[in-house]
Image (tube, rainbow over all chains, first blue to last red; front, side, top):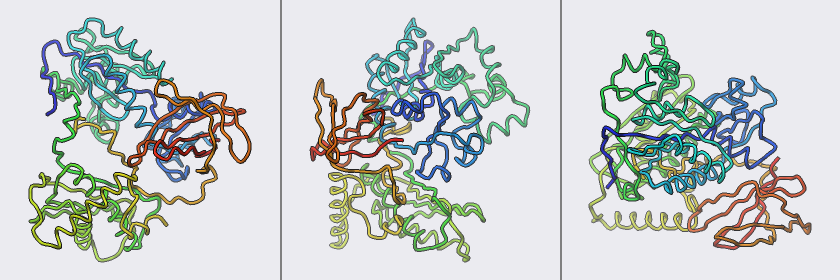
Length: 382
Length: 102
């Protein structure tokens, strides 16, 4: 069970947000990149990818995460580029998490580069924040910003106010002042369309959100929930399991599109089986550059975690698309209505199928993911 | 791990095969390495590649990745001003040069 720490009057959350995390790690690995505008792209092809992370030097030029790399190079033709290698970022994130655990407070991941610490009743939060920053820098040569406040949303906002290497405390005394100076887009979830809609309605600062959206920053007095991570939580049942992928180029060949659906179905099925879950509902999402999104879902009588079954169900959903074959740019497969697998297959063929799936999973667990995979998947590698 | 929050072990890129193509950076060639092991860490000092010895002056970063039961230790190292990525597989005891970093 998760260890849930109930909010109290003395609640105090310390939010650690790594500064330009991926880009900073790449600059440590390659000292030549230090001090230069750098983007980390999600793909190897630097002109056909999306910016995963930008160094502060690139951010200063107006380059930001989520931007098309082509647009970033238009802003700065001399931009340095590195293709993302998730292994090193995840490893570093885990190492930082371990380091933070050493401080002895309840700790939680907020994302790959953000951590939340419950420091209620601790009397010297500023000193603690500085110590955390120093230890992270000493061990990894990268910097972090820290926000401290009475709840998670405010602490997260505080961590973004004084970047990089900043420490910001939001308390009852400076709440209005800090929030009035922070643009609305600094608030969690407000950087995109939601923020634009609210700005069009006249909301400009985080203080406007505080006044107009009660509860967003815990204005109703609720200091927010904080759940400490524990190994047992891995057994908690998620609501859905999903994988999606944006293709390097829009594809019109239905055989290759089917192969991509197979890949995503394999990923979803493998995760279901790892958690001993089955799904009753399968969702398919296809994005067509010329037609927009196609979304379909269906709930089936028999729950499954067989990747091939999920694939077949996804194909049935795809059959509901408009007849004309469109090019597909992105696609996703989701399994929901999850329940724990509590039945044993009765039919001989079902038992053979289950044995086969287990054997494949064991091979992949021993020799690495995708060591053995359906032949159809080859079509996605050409 | 809190299931409702971020799970770093859920590798979103792990199964996604991308067109590999020819990468001038990708080498994956076996090398011989002189390294010492101290405090549960590995410190490569020199490596021999294509008959030439490379003295490692600086290790800029190191990280690990599990692949099945194998644990791969990666090192970014500088030799004569050039940056290399080398790795050690703890199940096969194989050292290899992964790429020359530009």
